[in-house]
Image (cartoon, rainbow, N blue to C red; front, side, top):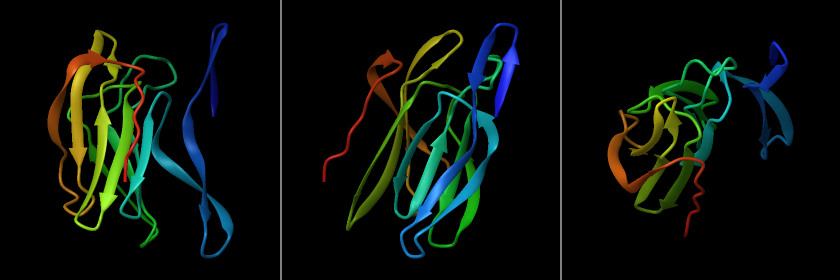
Length: 143
């Protein structure tokens, strides 16, 4: 949805499209909270939508919306800190599946936090740190 605040407009993600390869059908799904500047990644048959900022740029989000494509169900979890402009990536091989959410910012400045989330345990993320606090960074996966 689009909200107007004076002369400024911001687009927040609340609804997104999901394509099912098995049925070749597009469907729409809603996140729990509309937000912008969030990050997304997928691993282990699950899609993760983490963090972000509300439309009025007043509240950072800790929410991780999790879509399980195998069961067609939704759940939520939380980042260790509320933030936006974070980056997400994931790795998966026969022995491990992990989603990473790193960096980002809050109104006070950038973060060095890395939240590490395992789809197999579905528990709260463990944390690590970047060498330097960063925002608007990029990530990739190998393997």
